Length: 338
Ligand code: PEP
Ligand code: MN
Image 1 (tube, rainbow, N blue to C red):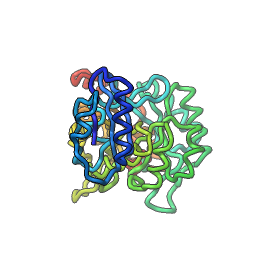
Image 2: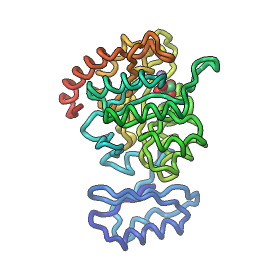
Image 3: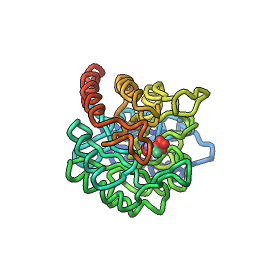
């Protein structure tokens, strides 16, 4: 249930509603918007009379949310959520935030070279995996903490934020020293222990859609993080598995407007994993921006043919530079900027 308070409702009346809801057994999540305070009430099982809330002083509207996710629902924050990273980067506003970098951090020279080129082309966030969820246990598993150190150094040098994947909840405290946003990979979207632990931190979380997850399941996974108190969640469409096998995945561009309607959380798109081939990445990135994506996550490598992971879907730096020029033309046509 969501309780929308009247514009200018006093703090006393807000507290009174909170107390009443807590007496009924609800957990309260408060969102203070530009005009209205909104209270998300979750958890109570007992039947109650909605009028008991509607009649309290300062209450404008009470909405019973029928979707199983409540805090991730658009009703909780009708104006949309802005997720702030460091260096003035905000996801969910007018700027389409481009996050770019290699699939995996491989060496000091590699990460510095990629960071320099993507920063020069206009990326705001450096992506790169130090802990890699590989299908085969014999494939490169990532550099671990030393990889995060290299990434942080390269990001500082080129004025970028850092996003990197956390695979296990025990890695969270250590990773907080290096990253501005913690990525939950597709394979971990329903790792509920991990999601609950991420609800306890304040740093933003980039939550990728599971390989065969529905949009509702994605939003329920976001709800796990938000229920713990961390509302800084950015969703990521990265392609799903369908009956078509031509590409690595089927990028669900329609998920962008669907999620915009259902949820207030920003949605970014990963056309690299969404297609699995570098010759298809640019067109899907352009389509994503045109469809309203709040950001892009793109794999770029200084020498893709020698990459230790996902080389075939990694752009050459020159291709990324050209793509950014095209995106800068598309964004204004849909009221955005890059
Ligand atoms: C990645 O971003 O490198 C990655 C492993 O992505 P996904 O979890 O979407 O497969
Ligand atoms: Mn990858």
